Image 1 (tube, rainbow, N blue to C red):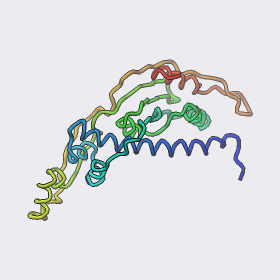
Image 2: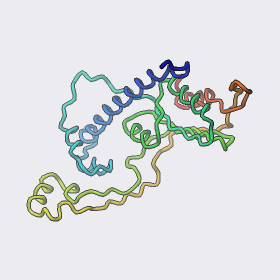
Image 3: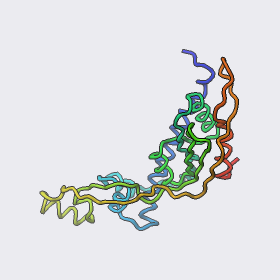
Image 4: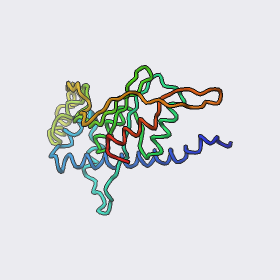
Length: 227
């Protein structure tokens, strides 16, 4: 089936999304290794900080020897967009503009993880109900807010955990709650708030006024100092 002109960017957008996922996975693994080798964290503390119950995969990353010829990871600029009330056409123009700049759009959770991996991360608030647009350059805080629940054995050093499972298996899997009160998920590095830019668009039947997404993205670029 032939696509419309607006569909022509989808193959490239899919390839870009796959590349971004692979790049983020590489950065994710390297960040875990850096947490141990540079930050001095143990597999247990890394798992606790990330809210992961099973540290098997983390141990796998820590034991892996990365190839010496791996080039530095370059993550795309990440945008988390909050634009309730905007039309589908406005969202389509916004996402097309993000993709055209080589940036990546994701939700807050994905942006948090990519920020932790080192990506430049921007939150854009452009709801249709407001006359202003808020743009914030942010960095993720160390831990996600919430509560971590892990088996008792996962809070112990490796040898102690093994001994507990061998000698007291009936308590090794007892769930232990670790309350983490992190009301702030992001640290704001820079931000700007301005009147919502509008432009005329011809939808075929009439000319309508809607958010000027090109102007909004230009403000994002200015905030992060990119052309």
